Length: 325
Image 1: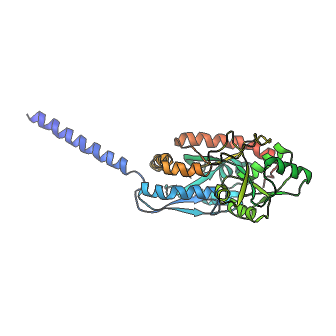
Image 2: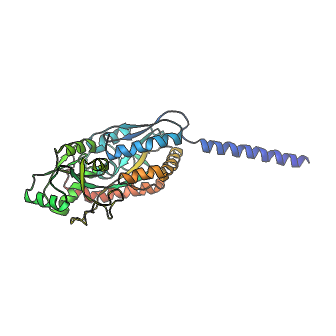
Image 3: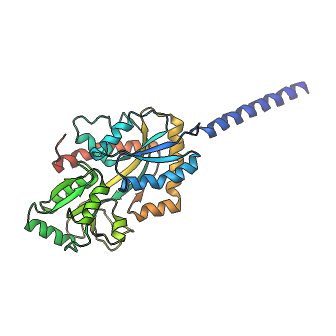
């Protein structure tokens, strides 16, 4: 009887210990009420900013702490990324990384100010947005063929805008110049938002952008082609570049990263919650509506993907002719 009691007591102690461990594991991160900051290295209004703000509220609800978006724009996203790698690796500052900042930039800057692999902890891939060729609503061009013909007739006369040197719009524009043989001039801005505003106003002639669907739907911009393999569900009547006579593929990707040596529980918790958010029908629909292809997956998968993209962008940047600053 005494032996049976001892066994019961040991079992109870083990059960309590297990419950305590499980409780600790469930508590995980965050362990305090400090806000979590999503650092967006681009101005308000662009596609990166839109994705960040779309995540902030549901992520705040999931974590039980405030989640705020902070924009730190400049140098094609590099300035904000430089500031990010100096942040504490406690999980409370998240970078909304992009193909521009974490894949193209290493080939554009001699002194980048951060290591594209070793200064980051990958968390989760979010989405990929194919670029769309857009012109002002008052533009005389109603097709990509008309635009190409006009650019070839008057080389160097027409301009395309971008969020900055090395950004997805710049590299897409360079790809388009190569694919079409058209001579168009690049006008870099400090973010896609300001560039889109100048495009709408007619100060530049075109953009190959990832965040224009709102302006397209409101009639401010006219889409001519999408740089994807298939037509986008959000723009079913707009041909692909291949269908329009100038084959090319160009897109921007977005993901979340923490500083190097971030706590594993923060990575796990963020990855779990963000994957749930991406599967949410409402969020999924919003991303699809802005022309995005939703991704998600494990932190390890995003790490392998982002590293491989650094290599892939080496040739894209080289072919663009962009000078290394």
